[in-house]
Image (cartoon, rainbow, N blue to C red; front, top):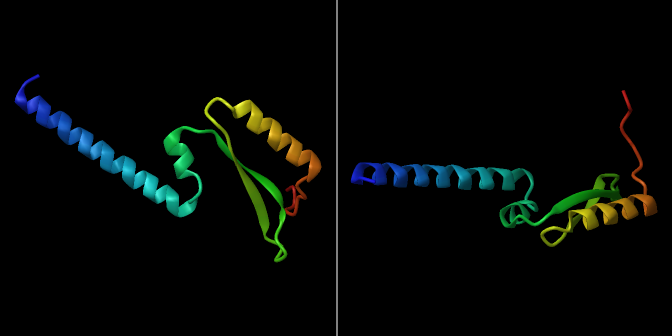
Length: 92
């Protein structure tokens, strides 16, 4: 690899890194609890779990170790059976 291609590769890495960081920061504005799990690759999910006293919906976030997706889905299923989500929006 010559000097010019090394500089180009370094410039591309800096641009890709800057774009990646900008994307993470932008997503943090909309969903502040998910970036840590997206960055680590750990499975995580948010499961509806009733409403607040104000009537606003609330949820619980489940996080598992790498490879534990099946366990998270089972826990989510058990939560749904114990506390079914009450639909408040019309179906049509």
